[in-house]
Structure formats: structure tokens, C-alpha cells
Length: 357
Image (cartoon, rainbow, N blue to C red):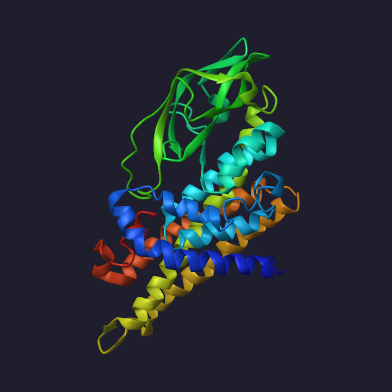
């Protein structure tokens, strides 16, 4: 079954050309300085790549999940920081607004996101609860025509970039039958009482914006409730399913970069009078990576394909994320082994890949 059509191949060519011409020349500088590349995000918007899965009525192109997976894969092949910025901005922030928001909410937040003029964040993770939406402790109390939010979120991608416009926050809005009533609220970046911490100093993805988010009597209009009150838990699960496809696609792109770099080096590097590519031990590593990469890509594309067809995809998405992310770690390790001492040098071609960058 051929999941990839001519439209998808055209998207891949467009993204690969952009990544090679505009991202690769600055990727090392971005990693070393941790600078957030606003200009690259805006270029992605100009190319129409941030609104692929958003309807045309809201500034997107009405494309499919598979196209988005290919975009994330191709970006991760060159720079995972930019890839996770796009994946989180589209699958975790834009998607819930698109799926559950009112028409007014969509018209306010989605067009600038699609254009690359604005980014969004999804604030689910908490210091104590992790990513368990049901254990959320951040609370929102409805006082008249406004929500007052208090709590702390951790590890929130895109929460403090120069163009962050909103944060979708998972909060407790009350109790039902003795259980937490979970809801999602769209919090504008300039909302009173919203504070983001300094960027985390991460081992990898250093040009990706990741911060703590604090709500200190944060005031938000009542109409910013996303969907129905109490629907936040189900909304979070659906959102995370789409996010898993994004992480799987990132992992595929990283593994592809590791394989390409290793193949090129193995053909060029000579030892004992011949290219190390001719040694069977190296060939075994390369073949195992190639087979794993093919399987990871197919799992990822299958999950995207099922989602686009409206079929159940929760389990396939989880399987794709598990397999592809484990492959990415193994691919980075093997790339370092194949490169030998050069693999341990930061100026070498695969050192950043070993930190899942």
C-alpha cells in the first residue's frame, strides 16, 4: 500500500530544499547559542507549512496529517529544535483550538499561527502530575465573566518565544462525582498574572523554547474556555495522540540523518587500506539502522494515514512513537561508533545528534 502520493512528495521536496538552504547553514549557531529562530518560523509560515492541517477558512491549506509528519521529519533531519517547535506549535497548540474551539476562537488564533506570525503552546505537564491530565493541580475558578487561574506548569514548549501568542492550559475547574473536572482554557500570552520562567538549559534541542509557566491569579475571559467545561481530559488525550505522531516523525528524521552521515563517512574513511564501509561489522550496523528506519517510517505514516481517514489511531500512534524514538537513540549511538573519535567531537557531524538534537 503506497501511503505517499504526489502531493506528499512535493511537500517533501519543498521542505528539504528549505531545510538544506536556510536551516542547515545556521543550525550549529542556533544550537551553540540557544537563539530562538523567529525568522525561520516566519519563513515556514510564508511557505504554508504551518497551516497544513488547518482549514482554509482559518488561514491553512486543509491538508492532511501525513503531510505534516513529512514536514516534521524533514526538519528533524537537519535541526530537531526547529522540528519540535513546529510539531508542538501545530499538533499540541493549534490542533486543539482547531478541533474544539469556537468559530471566534479559531478566527482569532489560527490565522496568525498558520502565517508564522504567532506560536502557541500546550501547558499540560506539571511538576507533580507529569503529563497525567487526570492528576492536574492547576486550578481555574470562574468569577463572574472571567477565569482566575493558579498553578505551575513545567517543560512547556513555545511558552516564551518572542512570537508566542497563546497557551492552551489544562486546569481543574471544579469536581464531578468526587473527581477532578478537567477543562482547557486559552490563555493569551499577555494575560495578567501569567509568568514564564527563563529557558531551561537543556542537553539538546537548545534552540527550542522550553520553560516553566506560572499562573498567579491569572485572569482570562470566560469565553476563552476551550470547548465544553469538563471536556478537557478527553481533549488532552486526543491532542496527545496527534503529538505522538509528531514525535515519531521527529525520531524518523533524526535516524535518517544518522544513517546518511554514517554512510557518507564509512565510504570516505579508510582503515587498513580500505574504506571502513567494506568491513562487515560496520555493514551490520548500517543495515540494522536502515531496516529499523524503514519500519519506523512505516509505523509513523500508518498512524498519520489512519488519523486522516478518521479511523482509530491511538494505539498505532503510541507504537510509532515508542519504536521510532528508541530507534533514534540507537541510531545516534551507532553513528558515534561508526565515526569513532570524530563522533565524540562537537565539531563533528554527529555529536549533536547524540543529544537528540
